[in-house]
Amino acid sequence: MSVSAKQSKQNTERAGLSLDEFVRLAELYKNFSDPTRLKILYELSHGDLYVQEIAARLGMSPSAISHQLRILRNVRLVRFEKEGKGVRYALDDDHVEDILRIGVAHVNHSE
Image 1 (cartoon, rainbow, N blue to C red):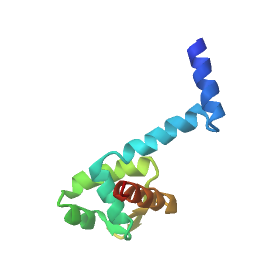
Image 2: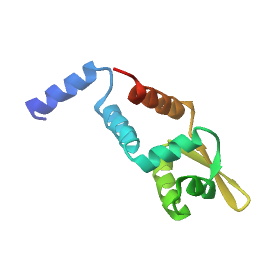
Image 3: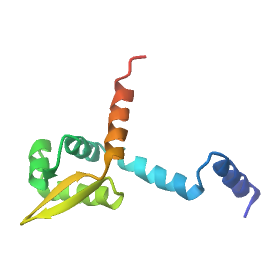
């Protein structure tokens, strides 16, 4: 391991998180950087929805919404439950709603 890599690892560990945790955190925030995904998460923060309902609210095709939901599922921001022929989506847990709420408060905060 190079001197620079060792220093980076030591600095990371001093911050209280492992390098792996920082990588996972960056991946989480990366998914909040896409406006479509944010809109989906925002809609789900108001309650569980079917793909078709999300698509109608955002003016997008169900296949485009399904693609984004698959990405959000992979990083555990949303969960789903099959109901008959449909699939209902929800935020994975309260942390997701907290992140959204804090983000909205931050961007709306007056300087």
